[in-house]
Length: 304
Picture 1: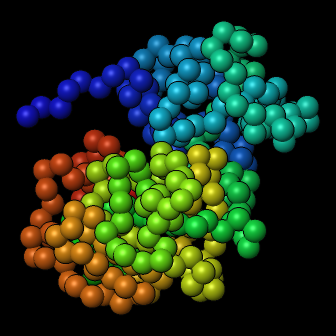
Picture 2: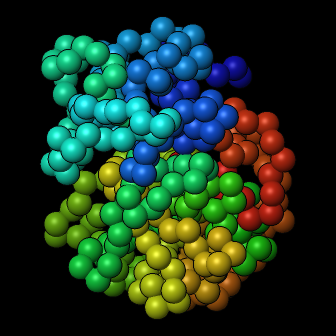
Picture 3: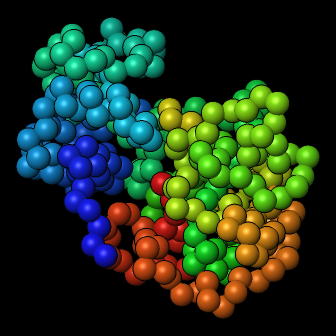
C-alpha cells in the first residue's frame, strides 16, 4: 500500500533537518560553535529555495514542530572571514528565548539564526550546542527505543553505536501510549503511572519503537561516558572511545510488544533474539528517512 503524500510541513522539515544536521559542509554553509546558521543562507540554499520557503513559514515551522527539532533566534549576526558570529548584543537570554511568532519583529532573514537541536552527523562542539549533564541534573529515566531487527545488530555488536552521527540518542521518558512491561520499583517513573504523572516525551524516540533499552545512568557515568541534553530534552552521549555505549551499561532491555519480555537485565543477556528478528520488516527503516543505504552492524535505524 503506497504511503500518503507528505504534507508541506513534513517536506520542509525533512529538508531542513538534513541541511542543518548533515549537509552543512556539503552545502558550504557557515555554522557557529552553538550550531547556528544564518537564516538568509538557509532560505537561499537550493534545498530550501526549491520549496519557496518564506521567513514567516520558517518561524511557524520552528514554533509548531511536534518534535521541537529546531531553535530559531532573533539576533544580529556578522559575516567575518567566512564565519557566522553572534554580535555582542546577542545575550545568553536571547539565545534561550522562544521563537517570535510569524509577522513579528524584523522581516529580514539575515537578522535570524537557526539550528537543529540534535541529530548531527557534522562535527559540533557539544558543550556549546548542548547542556552538560552532571550531578545536579541527572534524569530519572534514560531510554533508547529501537526495532526488533536493529536489536539483533545491537546485541551482536556489544552495544549502541553512534555510527555516522555525533551522538547516541536517548529519551528522558516514554512517548504517549508507551508503558514498560517490567515490574520494578522504577517502573512508575519510567512509564508515567506514578502519583505525579510526567508529560509524555515528544523527542528522542520514534513511535514505531518496539524494543526499549533502559540505561543504567549511574553506571555509565562511572564508566566514563559523558552526557548532554539538547534544547528539546533529548539525552545524548558520544559513547566511549569507540563511539559505543556498551551493553554492560544497559539496566534493562524489553520487548514492549510483550512477546519476549525482558531481554537484558543489569547488563546480562537473558534471551537471545528470535531468528525471525534478523529479517527486516517492510516498514523498518535504514537510517535517515528515505535513505537506501546498507545497514552496518550495530547501526540503529530507530534513532530519531
